[in-house]
Amino acid sequence: MSLKDIQDDVDKWASQFTPKYWSPHEIVARLAEETGEVAREINHLFGTKKKKDSEAKKELQDELIDVLFTVVCMANSQGIDLQETWEKVMKEKHYGRDANRFKKN
Image (cartoon, rainbow, N blue to C red):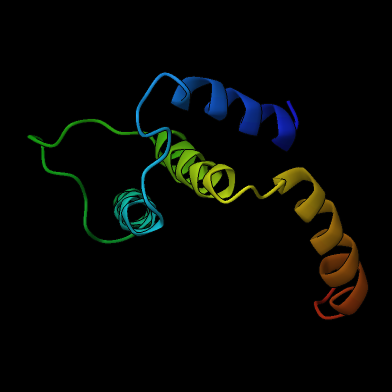
C-alpha cells in the first residue's frame, strides 16, 4: 500500500463525517496526544516504568498507526500529497544532503 493509497483510505473514511476533517489546531492536539501514547508504550517496553496490572493492554504498532492516521488527516485537510512529498524529501535530504552524514555499514 502506497502513501497515496493510505491517504485515499483515510479520505474515504473521513468523507462520512461533517466536518470531514478537524481543524488544524484540533489535529495537532490529537497528534500530541497520540505521540504521548507512543512515548508511554516505549517507556513501558524499554524504560524503567512498567505497566500497572490495571492498565489496558496496548501495542506499540497500534499507537504508531494512530500517529500515522493523524498525520494523514493533517495532510489531507491541507491538500498535501504525501507520496510526492516523501519522494522529494528522500531524494533531496536523505539521499542527497544527508547521504554521507551518518556512519554506514
